[in-house]
Image (cartoon, helix red, strand yellow):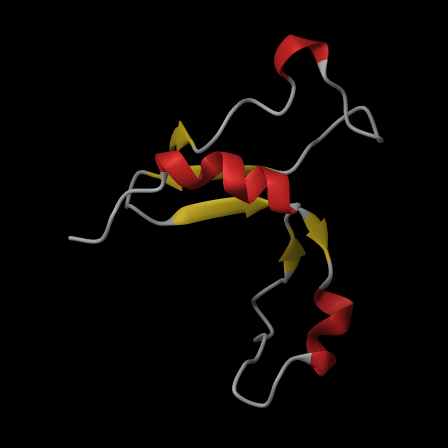
Length: 79
Protein backbone atom coordinates (compact mmCIF):
# COMPACT_ATOMS: atom_id res chain seq x y z
CA UNK A 1 0.00 0.00 0.00
CA UNK A 2 2.70 2.55 0.99
CA UNK A 3 5.28 2.53 -1.78
CA UNK A 4 7.50 5.60 -1.42
CA UNK A 5 8.20 8.29 1.15
CA UNK A 6 8.22 11.78 -0.33
CA UNK A 7 10.99 13.80 1.23
CA UNK A 8 13.44 12.71 3.88
CA UNK A 9 12.70 10.40 6.80
CA UNK A 10 11.49 12.73 9.58
CA UNK A 11 13.42 10.62 12.10
CA UNK A 12 16.70 10.67 10.16
CA UNK A 13 19.82 11.27 12.21
CA UNK A 14 17.94 10.55 15.45
CA UNK A 15 15.50 13.45 15.06
CA UNK A 16 12.53 13.04 17.36
CA UNK A 17 9.14 14.71 17.31
CA UNK A 18 7.73 16.61 20.24
CA UNK A 19 5.63 13.58 21.14
CA UNK A 20 8.58 11.25 20.47
CA UNK A 21 6.40 9.01 18.34
CA UNK A 22 5.16 10.35 15.01
CA UNK A 23 6.23 13.14 12.71
CA UNK A 24 4.65 14.81 9.70
CA UNK A 25 5.22 12.61 6.68
CA UNK A 26 4.03 12.17 3.08
CA UNK A 27 3.74 8.80 1.33
CA UNK A 28 2.89 7.71 -2.19
CA UNK A 29 0.41 4.84 -2.30
CA UNK A 30 0.42 1.88 -4.66
CA UNK A 31 -2.51 3.35 -6.62
CA UNK A 32 -0.70 6.68 -7.14
CA UNK A 33 -2.58 8.61 -4.45
CA UNK A 34 -0.83 10.18 -1.46
CA UNK A 35 -1.19 9.76 2.30
CA UNK A 36 -0.31 12.67 4.57
CA UNK A 37 0.50 12.40 8.26
CA UNK A 38 0.04 15.63 10.16
CA UNK A 39 -1.73 17.29 13.06
CA UNK A 40 -5.51 16.92 12.84
CA UNK A 41 -7.01 20.39 12.29
CA UNK A 42 -10.45 19.21 11.19
CA UNK A 43 -11.96 21.35 13.96
CA UNK A 44 -11.19 24.37 11.76
CA UNK A 45 -13.15 23.04 8.76
CA UNK A 46 -15.89 25.60 9.43
CA UNK A 47 -13.41 28.35 8.59
CA UNK A 48 -12.75 27.09 5.07
CA UNK A 49 -13.70 29.37 2.17
CA UNK A 50 -17.18 28.71 0.71
CA UNK A 51 -15.67 26.88 -2.27
CA UNK A 52 -13.97 24.27 -0.04
CA UNK A 53 -15.34 21.63 2.29
CA UNK A 54 -14.37 18.71 4.48
CA UNK A 55 -16.70 15.72 4.19
CA UNK A 56 -17.68 13.47 7.08
CA UNK A 57 -15.20 10.83 5.94
CA UNK A 58 -12.35 13.36 5.56
CA UNK A 59 -9.88 14.99 7.93
CA UNK A 60 -7.82 18.13 7.52
CA UNK A 61 -4.21 17.86 8.59
CA UNK A 62 -1.56 20.50 9.06
CA UNK A 63 1.73 19.75 7.38
CA UNK A 64 4.65 21.98 8.30
CA UNK A 65 5.92 24.04 5.38
CA UNK A 66 9.39 22.49 5.60
CA UNK A 67 7.96 18.96 5.28
CA UNK A 68 6.16 19.83 2.05
CA UNK A 69 9.08 21.80 0.62
CA UNK A 70 11.47 18.90 1.26
CA UNK A 71 9.01 16.50 -0.41
CA UNK A 72 8.63 18.70 -3.51
CA UNK A 73 11.50 17.03 -5.39
CA UNK A 74 9.84 13.63 -4.95
CA UNK A 75 6.36 14.67 -6.15
CA UNK A 76 5.93 13.44 -9.71
CA UNK A 77 4.90 15.78 -12.50
CA UNK A 78 1.44 15.21 -13.99
CA UNK A 79 1.27 13.04 -17.10
